[in-house]
Image 1 (cartoon, rainbow, N blue to C red):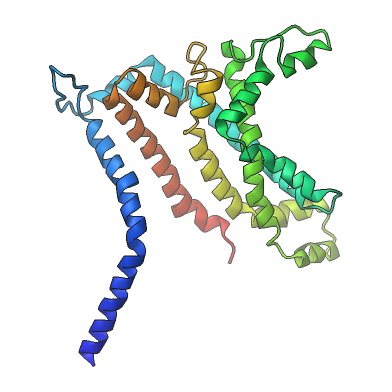
Image 2: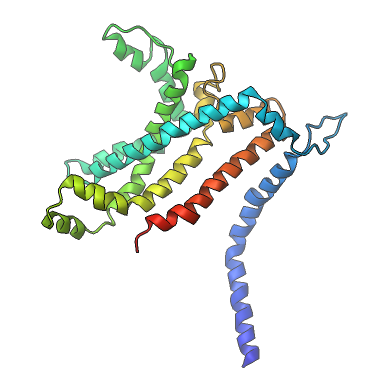
Length: 297
């Protein structure tokens, strides 16, 4: 009997490894090995044909901290994330509440909200490039009707980053709306009826019942929005290329620029490690602390 039970356990373990092996192989090739390679590269100097790379410890990290461009990029990304994340989430929730209500042409409204999401990033950026063209774009054509002069939205530091933020919110709000819409449809209508019987108005129901029940979805959307805020690069290639004067240069674009434009891969690896540390810390806080406070059982 013991040998039969041992054989069954080994067979179940083999089945388990067979099921997990495809994902494990893909994660090893495209996540674990690149992460380890990047971490090791961040501790070596920039090598050339005549002078090979040597171990220099944390010197690459110190160079980044002493580089004014680093702090400009960090500030740009903090401002970008601090505006796009709450604005996208709030707009997505409002759109989902409206699209979930009993309104005429509800299917058309949902499709209109979701349309920007299905557009390729490059196509969306080119579309907004036409909107922002000074003097000839849609925005300047509309403002010109009120006697306002043309504005170079992407060509001056005061407005360039805000113009990119508008594109991001327009692109992501419809995507996040889908998650909220799905979550709203899982909430039993009995809760709203019970709240109405107890005398709760629409505002009280939304604040005391609806929003708390949507908190797990909000946490999920927040993490996705945070990840998106540090991986934007497509729009910048088309709209600004990080300019003017580094006003729209964000983390991932700067990493690409260091690695493939300046061929400074050790410093790009060091910056990548810093980004992974920040994102890992946020993920630990979410799954270790916040998740325990937002799920209702």
